[in-house]
Amino acid sequence: MGKVMVIYKIYPEEETDPKEIMDQLDEIKDIKSAKNEPVAFGLNIVKAGALLDTDDDPDRVQEELEEKIEGYRNIEQGEANLIS
Image (tube, rainbow, N blue to C red; front, side):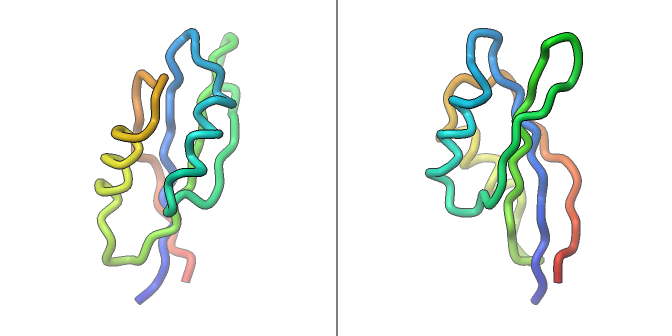
């Protein structure tokens, strides 16, 4: 069994500071990294990396993000990279 890093793109609502979302990610055990990334014209997103087993379901983590994070307007599941 290997490990996969799945990247989630979290789009904050206009009035939400991306730092607030990053602070909330500490509560989610699968999230191992997070960074604020400028996209365009003052729009910033949070990219969060979840380390999962290859047989784990990335949709489970997305559902957990949607339940526990406040102040977002959209969460997209992005790229997945095999780690080991």
